[in-house]
Length: 421
Image 1 (cartoon, rainbow, N blue to C red):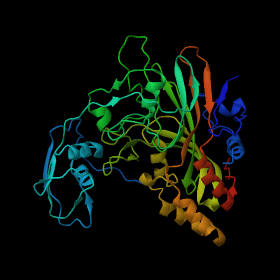
Image 2: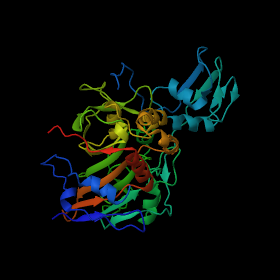
Image 3: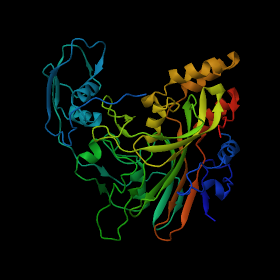
Image 4: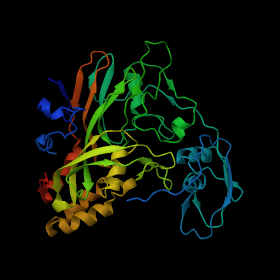
């Protein structure tokens, strides 16, 4: 019997009663979790072409200079930080913003320290990229929803909009800051290797990133075993050791419905050469050495709003940055609310409005206007305990905002997917 641990974000709600068989994630049997997931959710009421050839991305930008005139063909307003980022291949916008704030950027001979300064065609821009300053994570007394803790691991229910670890522009208020305080650890200084926090390209598989001060083998390290994007809610395991064995199941709301009710997406994922903050699924064996193998299994749990949306379960075989979001976009069903990957409010309205009764249109407009994040939730987390070898399984229901959207979509219409088996 596999022990089951549940967490519940609503004080007035009871912990979920789930059959352990629901949570078995056997590596021998890759089948999906039983259809019980739909009952759980009710109980709580709740294309891209191959990239072009390009030059290798730098790993160091300190001292890089840019002297360029804004193209006369550019129309409308251009943000200074965005424009510079587009002219220096591979650099993060946060790094550019740091250089601007340090007074290292001139426009038409005058120092400009406002990152959102508007450029016009013909403006002459001079920029020097500043040296990279090592990041530090200070302990902060931040409330954490801790589902489970022992001497070896922490399992945390992360709220949406909480950043997991410090990065340029997010040095405070992160999960790591809270963990340092919770575990009574000193300030953590990140490695001085620029690649760790300038490329923003750590995948979920790149583990044990933050090491505490090396006090010897017994020192506790707030290692993030896997990451969740800022907008993603749900379960995350934090290791006081180096941990690799992890199993995850997510649920999402999508724009549209997959053409097949279940399947496996085995498409490599790499950095989008046109947008540094976005990943892209690239068919083929390689993406000039920078795409990595990525495989996701999915299953449609409910068809919502007459096919305008779907409740989809995902099981990850790998853990790449933005893996579900990039694969969903590749499938033509970007996550609802995911502005970066195409799940915009306009797209949601274009799919939902034709399928919605006229009397519900006003409510639909209000609903879509409240979409604030990609509706993705880490529902189930499983791993083998490093000390006892016990197979641990945790389940946590989606937060209220997810449940509210789901219930509204169900009111418009709900169907079981048609199985082709």
